[in-house]
Length: 511
Image (cartoon, rainbow, N blue to C red; front, side, top):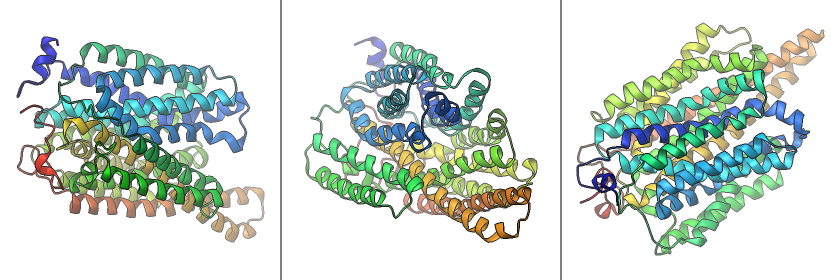
């Protein structure tokens, strides 16, 4: 063992390379988050080039979502078992290879396969990145700063993806939205390999819970696919209902298995702790609201306002600025001074006020008057709330469980994203349809009919945004009610759920 690694787990002596490590972990996180939006902008061009039918187009997004969402818990457990650094570097290498395959795709099968592979390696990469932060940053103030940076990237990266995706698609070629991942991955993997020193004794070497892996993967895949299908085929469609039923049965069986096996894939103490349970639930709800809104604003700016992809990306910058400010300035500065719920609850409420402003959208709404302040408040609130949520989700967890606790954060985000897109899209579509049906008769000319169509779309978006406001208020209520930990460094940080007495809080890496 190297001297640096030896120092890393001495009580009170943090790893000397931790801040350098944060750079490479943040870079990898940025790549994964960018990928979620960058491909959406390239999709129309890729569809045309590769001859993908409209019916199959959704699989470019769905193949990634299913593999990523379904395998996250398994990926988190692999990180705990195999070592987080090794899992992180392997995930990066695989993600780069899958991106190269996507960029070189010559038909739809290659494209769908590469997206599924990206999801598989993303599921290794994401929990390993978050759990590395959890075990490397053990001082409360430093932890706040590290999670502030991570939270800002997790929130703002998606909007940066819109700008980068727009530039690459408009000025180069859609293939570059895949190839751009390769330099990110190579730099992050090389840096991580040389800089990261994982604390000794933080691995979980128990035997792998195979029934748990199978049940959780199939259950999560069925759940995500159910929501994805509901969006395109409708909620009452046979396969959609079948997926939801199968998911409920599989996930119930998973919980039953986890309660009985000696070395569970997901120790139930990770989720039954009221602090972490509250974080996973409120974060999932906030993501439902956020994802739906992202989609509507993109459509609104491009279809109703006629913005180009690049201009659309830049229009989202106030949200990014708000997130970075909320995460690194407000969240980081206050996390060691106030209990996390007093950042999460008000943060979600500020975001709800921003969302409330956006319910005033009309065809001729001024960007500076409504969109700018709405997005700024939304970003500020989300950044302030995300940062303590990310930190709390891995706080008070045994180091051996840091990977699966991190995977649960990512899982609540993935499932929230799938629900948000399907649920809010369905609301928007049904409102638009009824509006157009009611008003199209009075439109005599073609231009009047187009106006009714646009008015219907905006009406649909604002109706769905009202639901998103309600969801954010619910997220704030859950954060304020469930999350009862004191400020980091206080007395109740270790958690307050069952089995707390035998838990090792992450800040104490060794006794």
